[in-house]
Length: 401
Image 1 (cartoon, rainbow, N blue to C red):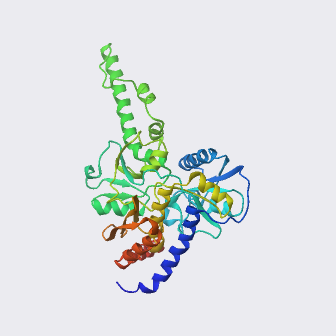
Image 2: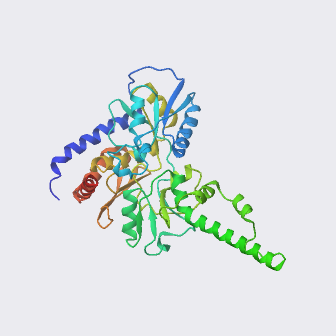
Image 3: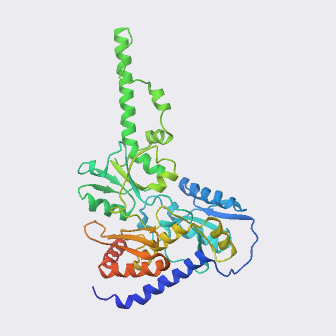
């Protein structure tokens, strides 16, 4: 394809600017201010998942002589609960408010889900710490543990992600993919509500029939269930109990979630889920990773020394560099997944149309010693194959909505 030569210098410039930040984070740099190690005010969103992530960072920093105070901050993404992520404005709906607190000195650092972060950062803000990443992939959650191939034609699958929607439709164009927002607990409750309420109604009806039969016969009737309704309810998980009380708006047959979010919410072993292969359901750049931002000062160096995980840093740098060069943000269905393998980083990328009917994909082994620049070159190759056209089409569609 033509028209990419003029963009190469700009793309390399972006990658170079980002590489300077990475170099700081990996090797250290001259600090601008001097601070004594003491109480560190750590900003976080107030959702259950965000607080769990912040608590894990708090624990790690506490082991390195930090007294960490968590500060809850409400973001634009938290305030607008009935809109899909890609319609909330530019990338960073869950990030900007926290980083603004860092930059104005209200807090010392902020915790983010890396997949929510824009690739461009304000001046004097740095990703100081990237702890070891959890599972990067997605899982299919159903009431009965069904696989994607087990779902009948026309089944309803819930997701708030353009990428997940496109990947689902690419694999199963006969499915109905419907919007799904809310925190992890809320999404699981929405999935479980129809089946839990149907089961409860079945038990109530059976109990009423048995009591009526016993009254008519003047004897004890045979029971359909081995336990009473009260015993059944007592054995439910809290999220199942909440599902019983939830109003049903859409009946989902399945939902797709990040495995890391499900695990951090304590629900991975509570609900029925099946891992989706990362070769086809390529995760979002940075999925499963946590990022801690600070100002470019001694706090950044201290945070890096305390919690930074070099393997995760390299892998997510590759993923986010591809995202940055292609300019996908949150409006384009794009998956990028990197794994460090010895002296190379294996990266797979998949860029799709919103309906999942078109795609550009590629894989490459990048030299670890030059992974940032090599990732930028890989992204340029994808752009030349048509990825930039898919991104532009997705962005135009988002602007029209």
